[in-house]
Image (cartoon, rainbow, N blue to C red; front, side):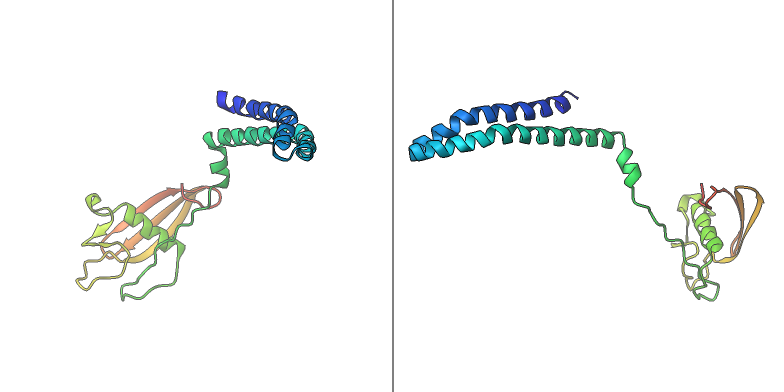
Length: 183
């Protein structure tokens, strides 16, 4: 906080001091370099600097105040939440028993997602015999292929997924928001 206040004050002070010093320093440099002509040129530059340097100091101070406000807003995470990109999730494809890609169905895709989250054996994290549930079938026939998925909406805001696979029947009770987003 101390640096947030000190920096703009320092910008204005350096602008005023630089402008005041320019009245003396610029004519001296000009006279040393080009004599009388340089003195006149230095006096003109010093006169312009008396007005311009404090204004530049004010603009620098304003920029640093805005930067401080930005840093504060960023530290409390206002900007990240507001400008956070929308993350899109690709839901699973569904392959049928005959190893054909079936038309997309939201309830089937969500059912496959639930089956992956809650596998038969919790230690294998959704993998059965080295492959994910609902992915393409392997020749050994050890797959868990989705046969049927239904959604029942018995209570408002709660979807009941009944899922039938080649290895099990699963029931998932899911709480939904008003826009259909799963909580």
